[in-house]
Image (cartoon, rainbow over all chains, first blue to last red):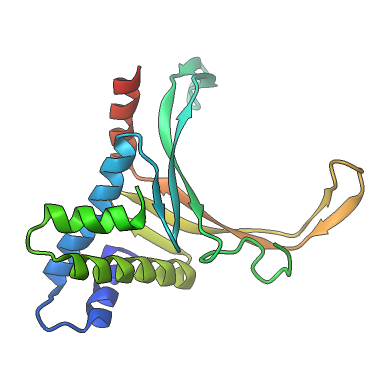
Length: 98
Length: 98
């Protein structure tokens, strides 16, 4: 699913005559932008009931150009990890474990 | 940053959105994202990233302490892959912190 599916669901659920898809879409963009800019500033984002976005530093390591096989050093960088909240997503899911 | 900080920031930075409206919209966004991920096993948000459910098949594992074999049922995991734009933005953090 995509952005538009979220916007349509929220528009339907909110049941407000003063909202339209454009407005809900803009607020959704603001929502994602606030999360992104917080992560960009190195701050984790914890959304209770959904999960946590965690900024993680990755050390530099040796790698290879997959096309040529040439060894290259992959520089240190930052990435975003996501841990879903247990209330939302259970790993076991039907296996009876966890 | 927590969910409540996120709600406050959205309302503060957008004069047209009251705190109450920001709150109900954010809760609806989270709920719509959850149900989309569970239903279609995939949610693609451009400029942000992709949430995907991965299926892992059942396997025989070992208790690392005792060496005993244990069967692990099939399970699902939810992964988030940051999109191109978010990855690029994380480079700013790398640049600023080095």
